[in-house]
Image 1 (tube, rainbow, N blue to C red):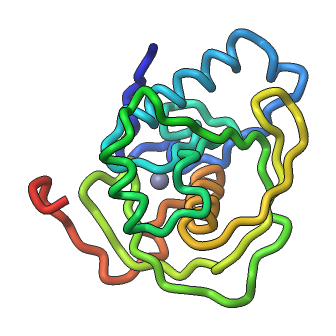
Image 2 (image 1 turned 180 degrees about the horizontal axis):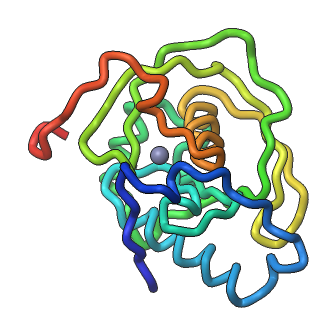
Length: 180
Ligand code: ZN
């Protein structure tokens, strides 16, 4: 179990365009350990729902999403996350992801980021996206996503290109720890 420190903005690694992962290296101990560390780091957070490799100082095109967000509404999610023991939480792995389709219809969503602690803002995201990637075994995957799952995918994809939600958000506000 290795929970790694999450980089905080401003930080150069958060602003780099991350590199593709060679599929041959995916089975290596180095990358498999990175995936386990990312999992441990994400599930240990109180409010995180996704984590991109640059956030733990590795500039690679990998992100993880908490499995419990898939097909869940935001209200149900926060309730379930509290009840679910952290060690029982599962994550989905996306390696070298690309959004191959994004709905023209966009919605305003309230967003935060583990690398921009205590800041929330409203951002426009496509309501639905289709993503192609490889899983932790190198298998090609394709998934459609909507709602909060689609939002997280777009947020994490931005991380891989050095973009943070605060770059495009409006009504950005600071939330004190006790209000969270
Ligand atoms: Zn983030």
